[in-house]
Image (cartoon, rainbow, N blue to C red):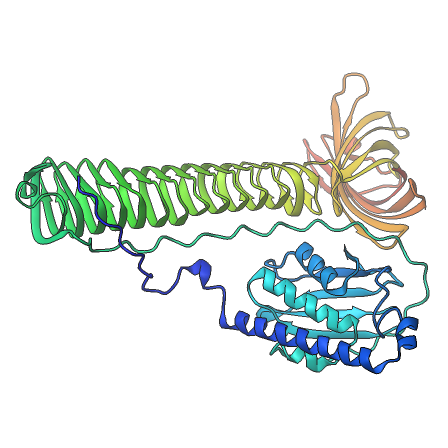
Length: 600
């Protein structure tokens, strides 16, 4: 087999690969502006130092307007673009200021604070509040590259902290915003200890460029219009050899040549040793031992070292990157997939995977975009969207999982919607399902929620209908479940009660809160545990913390009781409104009150 010379890489018609297009002209202008700004700042410092006497320099340990570096500066990130890594921005500002910078959720009274807020059209606003009451802000455009964006924000932070002129920020070629009105001086307060830094969501890994188009010519190879073989080396290859590029290739049992720049049709197997530019059609197999640009269509196996186009067959295999579509029973890509895999089983083992649609999807790529099927597994750095009956994301971060069962085993999870949702890391979005489990979650809505680092309270409460209950209230920051057991201590007869509920919490202050709950009570005879009635209750509770681990609560409620007879549904001590009464069913409603205590 002749081995052709390697052709020089050819730039794609659409310009450089998309991974390199992000370095824009605006980014280059920013780099020039950064250098200009640093030069101006250095010249100003040198001139000021030359003008001051030595005694004045010795007496002033820091420049005017600069916070003492030992005190540190706090940084609050408020809705910045997801491409910005808050930890990288914090580190860049620390290097620029030459002092400690702490990433916090909210500003602390008496501490110098920088607030970074995302704006439309790729801009950010950085506002600095000093301990002496100064309040100054600027809005600038930032480049798409995260590292250059962090450098630009750090440079702007240095200008604001040092109270340099707004014209310096204009050296970046950006639009300074209207300066905010000066805020009134904050009341004196004892400095609070530095807050724990907020964990930053890891930035998605850089996606590799799609494969460029293969050469459609082979140096040193003979170009022919038409060629064909009965079997390899029997046919036109007997006369022309195999170092041939055919425009049209026709094969019977099997054909072998260097390349095709056009169309190849075979009743059996088509084999190309170097490249394909065009279309291959066969009944058994299309084998390209080099890059393929175009389409491979067969009832059996399609093989190429890299693909730019489509593979349609029972088994499709690309040993390198794919920029296009694989459609078949089994699709395997050992390189980056910039396109889609559509089949019964899809496997992507490269650095990135765009779309997989099939019964079983497996992506061990660093970045996985969309998986749709019966079972989907993503085991790389990040997974964006999984929509399947069963979804497993072993990635460091996962964005959206929708299915019967969702499992995310990474550091952070966005949204999970399913009957069973499990996240071994922190949920940054929401869990909605029948059973939810998470290490930490701001929003878990389900019949059973288990939040390992969530709220856990022990409640005891009583109602106007004689129910004395004890239970557990457990859940996320804003939502919780209530599980309780108790007895009806007064009434026509004692009853055993079981309670299950769902509610939400609104924090009104450091010591007060409001809970809005909906509970269902099942009432039973104490001896045979025969159910006698069902009570539903909606309640609005106001709570007051008397001690760090103890609170009292109370509020109004509305109750609806269901029973087989009017007597079973008559649980109110002062009467109730008949909502429905017939021979086999009774429903009554009344307003009530709930009082209780809470521990933990």
